[in-house]
Image (cartoon, rainbow, N blue to C red; front, side, top):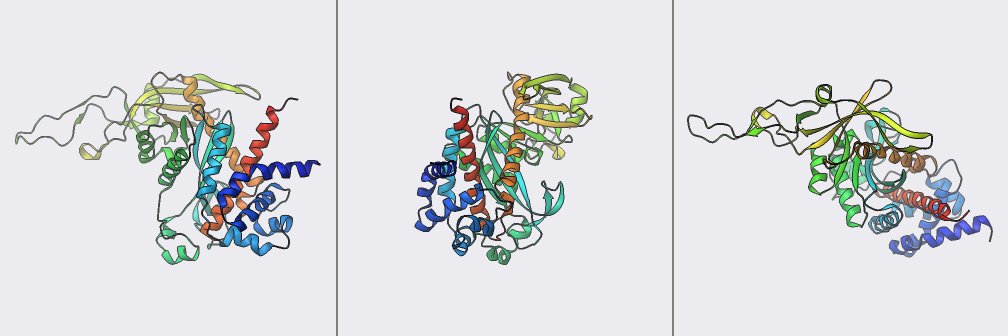
Length: 398
């Protein structure tokens, strides 16, 4: 058996549970071919070039399978979660929340809008996918990609109907999509020890509270302007007024200040080493202090009450810039563990880049809701297959 035949046989065997989850006979036929097309060499990984490589006589059938039909991705995503958990899941694993953008020139592709495009580093026409990545030891694997629909779409039902957006899909902010996706992958059996996110998610109290209510450890980016209280801030009942009416709000014995100001006042920068890299020990300058974020219920005059205790972390970069984070790890957590969690987030960016450059995540040219999510889940399956091969070969004796 030659090398090409061997890897195709390996792919066929590995895809058996995915094919079984697809149900319909035609879907079971076209899914492996499309995934093979994503894996084969080629500059473009859109439907027509893929069809030309793997099914030149069946271009219309491939197009229908991916872009036109409305099959449900949920059963396939369930299998994907199980596969990824078998490879990477555990208490020492991170679940990384992020988003990735797909630049678009037109305005008819589902969800496209003039919004921040990370791929271009500026405001531009693009689609935005909320992404969930499971990562351990800097090895990432995708478990979720869900399109964010701006209000310019959800407020225009005719536009949504044209792009085949299901009637049940309404506006959800990115943090809400992320929490729903976390619930989905957890229900699918994915194991992880800590949730990570950048300031696009971490700056929102709703997202952090949602994670805490679910009992998750988390480490998220925040803005330097977000307000903090000292960890031992005193909160006491206000004295009754002369009318005898009980006060509505408690009394806070200090005023909150910005994260940047809090670090200047209470923080001390020290070098922290968090792990060995390919070029030696990875170190950086960090100030780490215990705080209570000002994200509780509103007190008098709209000032938020102190929230639950957390670690406020400031990273001082070599160019003088500073980044800020909140981490809800236990009081006993070491600085190394806190920083390691913060720094583990970068692997999702590596995953996004590989999925685009090697597998054509951003090459899809269809316009429908179902088409985009079909392409996204099939791309994730292709990515995880490559990871499976890599891990298998690393285990093989030399």
